[in-house]
Image (cartoon, rainbow, N blue to C red):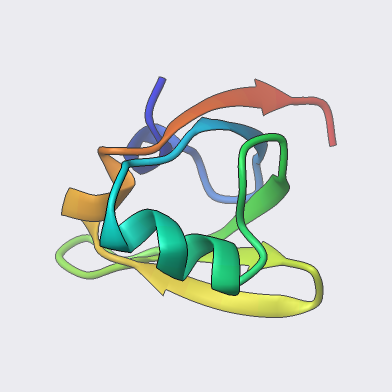
Length: 74
């Protein structure tokens, strides 16, 4: 599944990130393959808010569609 399909409150593990400039930005934020993140909020026409390493990161739906994840038990 992709990150844009994650439900609020669910914990997911990142399986793959897009290549290129976005990948470098994710790594700077502490997101990489194998990272566990929690979907904190979803806005209908806005971003997804993730919690990772005590920080919140907002991602647009287009970008979230490029990130493959697997749902994990909380």
